[in-house]
Length: 427
Ligand code: GUN
Ligand code: ZN
Image 1 (cartoon, rainbow, N blue to C red):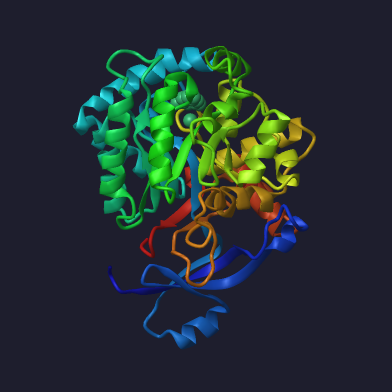
Image 2: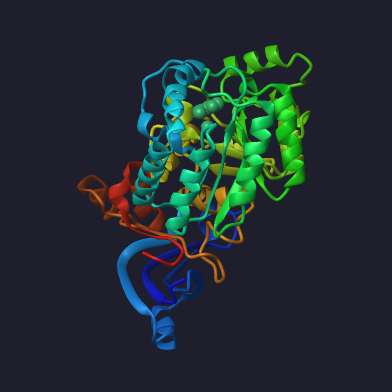
């Protein structure tokens, strides 16, 4: 790694507690500068003090820009980059019409590499430094994604999507190949540099019970890996699942029965949950991932953020690209705010920023590494220009405090608001 040190000056935001457990602004500290050394956060504090004590550090002055942890997107499908914003009806129809045909193209490793690089370019431009991605059934789609992320020094989580039914020919694996390929990829990539493997059954309708059980067994053999899937996204999807698993108590039980419920499980969407499912998820400390632009785009429903947070669930935030309609975590925070409003529980700007960073990192059990600015943590940072467009600027200049200044960027901002993205201590 290049040995180097930088002092970034601006309004440096860090969380010293969860804004869901205290008055939201009280969870946040604002410092004048952050010292980044050898890829890590070395110190936070007064600029003149950091400068006086670190004469080797290069100073980067961002003026009034906000400097915070890079965004952590807890659920994406990088292979859906090129078909984002495809008009559709319901989830299953959208999957069959657009998603599966596009995922078939990843049989070609060259195509997979091109899209992996395109996806990481786009998300970096949007200030996202880490993500958890589904790949396709093709092992080369996993190699392409990890290879591209590794060359950029990014902390990412990904896994081979497994499905052996209810998908087109050519987009199905088997019980044995799902297990063998996942295991080989896990052994190849998990723990290399900043890369982690996630065991990835797409969702119960596309895996037979035998395949779910095989992946549950693999997870038991590698309990330090994450496991990612989808849960209770649409009501008609749930009816379909219950028809396919008549013995199951509920949708979550189709995972639980086969060893696919655990603390390191990440359950995307999790909208229409029963009381039993909520209780089990909370008992396990499993990660629930809110995908608000996707949930409105595909018409899935309104995630119960306030209720789930109040009962102590572990929740992250995600774009769900390309079911989600944006690569931007700013746009995603705006959608989370809007859904909160529709449920009469508006989220504070500090809560939105926390969800997009520390909250998502917590869902991945990586809160000691990413998602906040604290000494010892990895230096993945985003620098936000709070006056990126005339429309945002004319509102922001009227603000009475930082939260009023930042909220127009959350609601109206996009990649133009991203002044800079730092990954692993490198601009
Ligand atoms: N459920 C199963 N697969 C998918 C997917 O690719 N996107 C979304 N939004 N939901 C899913
Ligand atoms: Zn998804």
